[in-house]
Length: 540
Image 1: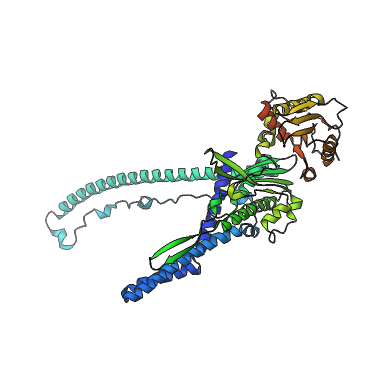
Image 2: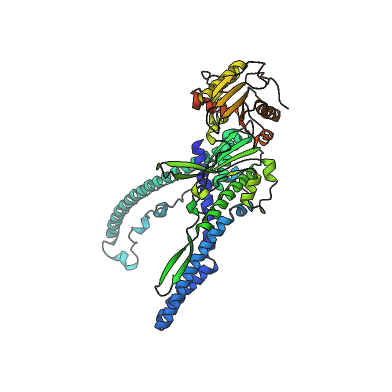
């Protein structure tokens, strides 16, 4: 899968680079480029003119060069300012069949080896018959007979030499032909494998396989055409029970905004100097770039989702940097947002202010992205356990791992209590039937951020309904708790996330639970639904 994904991404990157090269070629044909070239040619012609005219044209050529450099700077800024708008005019959907490569067969060019040498003919060597008076000369007949015998010998030697040369030619021809046929066969096998991979991905995608879904959307994002210098790297996880896609996307560094504001030609020094771009311009533009990439990525994912796999997308935009205090590499989240298809598709992205639009979506945005001030992700990417999301069939075959669905309700609540103890909370399990909607009460000992936490646990197969989230919020209020946590073996719908948004509630799905058990308790668990399983109390 990884190799297939790498090849698909390489193919997508090649297409993107081709588009960028075409765009660069178009930029080279701008008026400024033509003016610079015309000025340069005029300067060359002026070498034959007077020194004064040559000097004047030289200045014109230098000024034209500066004008071109300034236009290129302006084009870079405009490209950054229109990252979102430029994406709205293209369809990010990928027809997987279009990714099938056409064979690139080598040319068979044997040259002269393909041409057989004409065989020697007897008449070319036989002496002519004596004619006229020659017949009357003494011994003419004998001399002709002797010459004919000699000619036959020469002819025989020439036939043997021709046969040897033809044998060598045919051997060399067959060798070249065999090499050509081998190259063709290798190319045919490569194309067959690539086509088979595409067909397999198509089948898996139509079947809704999580791995295929992630591979498809990874290809969608890597196919997007961005200016040079953008990382365009993304980690993607898919939670099938809630149809949620979690994306951790690499944002470009602040240096993507050029420190050069303009170029200036100093005639007296015959030099071109750089004028710095003020930080007051670079900072807001970088914040806009972060916002535009966020909206653009959400747009491309929802728009490319023709099969409606996605109900919700969680987007975390991160940037890689170096901690100035430790010198170690760090990855900092600058923007995080969760949104549903219904909410996002109602936006008119061609008219929005990107940062204001993210505020409408209740996104958390860094207060100072240039200073790499972090925000807390809506959902940590590593909380989406790929073992549960991507490899359900594999997990179901590993019987030595405990299956959470085989625990009794009391055992499951005890497991949750022990887990939160391992995570550093002071947790206590409540008595059955007297819990008032609380399975576990925990206390976060941290000052300011700590407090009482109420926890509910539900071993469910189906998506937990929003009513359970409402009940938890009511319990938090009744208990005077600072936070409520709902843990389930399944997942949640968009209505649940919408209700919990802005409230002191945490919704942990089955994939989150498996990750926490492995990370904090060292338990390699699985979630496998027994035959005939029915949820105790289905939510509305």
